[in-house]
Length: 136
Image (cartoon, rainbow, N blue to C red):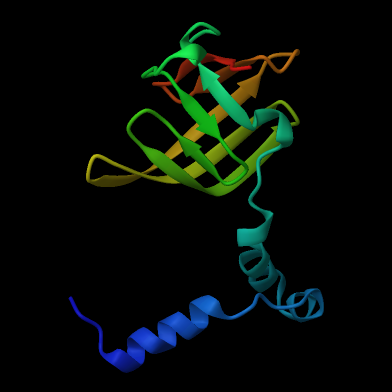
């Protein structure tokens, strides 16, 4: 479906507009300020960031268990997700909601991520995930 030129240009201008200042955000209602500030505040804690795989040996090769985590996204073997929400229960225990795409499909997925005490093992509790080791 093609959008008329004026609508397309209007959407581009809205998308490129700078975010409101802190003063502007604090003047809006609490529900408005949450939605306005949410895109810049969706970040995973630093200990989750990195490359994870089935084992340290798997890190040395191409592996189907590979998972790369950034503060704003997750990349699995054949899919990638942009994080849309993060709930931090503890510094080593978060729940992530992400919008994924891969192999021509799109979906949303919720992942419960838990780090070991030494931050070297990541457990993904989503019914599919399993356990991964931090790659060097």
